Length: 63
Image 1: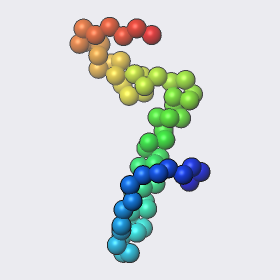
Image 2: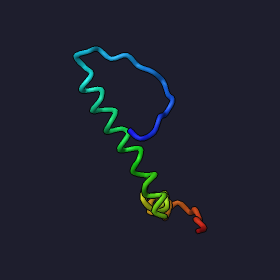
Image 3: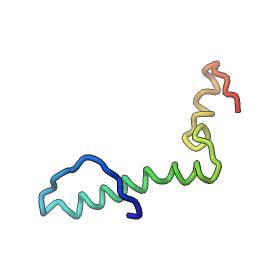
Image 4: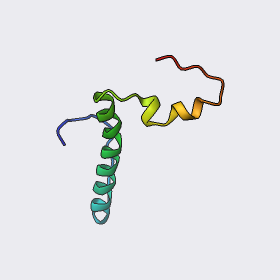
């Protein structure tokens, strides 16, 4: 990891360390993808699919 993030501490049984580490890496990847998209100029309304969801709800989105 490149950054130091302060957060809650957990304890993990020794036999579950690999599984916990794998889960943490997957979560970190999942959380970083939207940030990369935003930095590249993409809008959350598009990459989360909200534009399609609100199209039939009588909601006006203004860019």
